Image 1: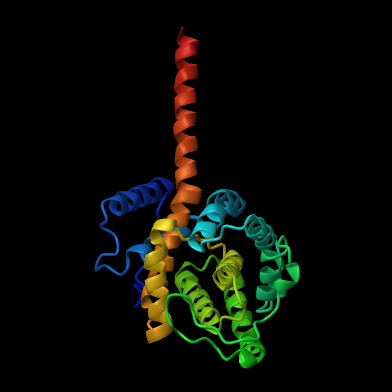
Image 2: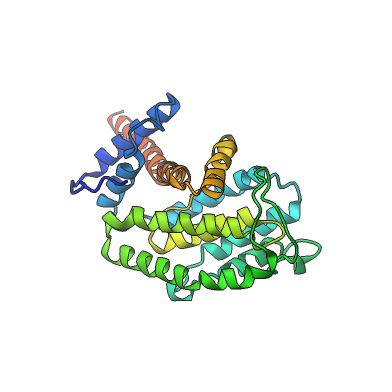
Amino acid sequence: MENNNFDINFDDSFIEYIFLNYQRRKKEKKLYSNDNYIPQNIIKSYYAINDNPRFEFLLTNFRRRYLYNENIIEDVHEIHERKGLRVVYEYVHEDKNPKDINIYEILKIHQLLYSKSPHPEFGGSFRNHPIFLPNSGVETEDWSYIPQKIAALYPVVKDVVALGVEIKKNNDVKRILSFVDKCVELNCELIRIHPFPDGNGRTMRAFTNMLFRVANVPPIYVKISERDEYGRAMNLALTENDLSHIKRFYYYKICDSIYELDIKPKLEMKFFKEKKDSFNTKKKKN
């Protein structure tokens, strides 16, 4: 359930205070409390004053941090897969016409993921054998039904993209979380279907980040220390159809991305500017 009582305007300094307090609570392990609205309201606060976030700046910072963490999370050791993931995010972060984004982007992403491998033909093809989800025992979709299950998601993705376009166009803060929810629900369904023999997690998170970009939601990445928590939340979604934990996980990850990719770099630039100005002032006096 979402707290929709949110019509307050904040300035930049107050947003900085909110995120600094968020980081303090995180270090003190006071997050994930019984207050379910902490990350939701932080996200809404950010968008209430940022009708046009510096999205390219966020993406540049994201690429520096994400690729290393993603490879560790998925226990990827092969250099060609690491190179492939970089190619994936060069593609995901292209400035695309949202109308061109559809469910079959997952085939393109998976193809790029293995484009640097000794056998690039492995990428971009649906699996043709049964498989169980790693570390869960959950049986995935019967491989023979994968093409039609993916095709059934075509209108779902179309609706999600249309919602993202409207949110970005109108700076519709109140529907940001609804958009995130729909993206996470889609992500979980794709993980359950598990259309590829390998690389499903990386492919679906990349696709989710592609959808996030439509509405100017910052891309998220899962840190090494969060792997178990992410796994538990995803397993609850897949085994018990309880998506509340994975949605909440994504809310917090969006907050992390906003802080780490936007707020923190701005604070650092502000600090160095103040130091430089102070130095120049002292220099003039002398």
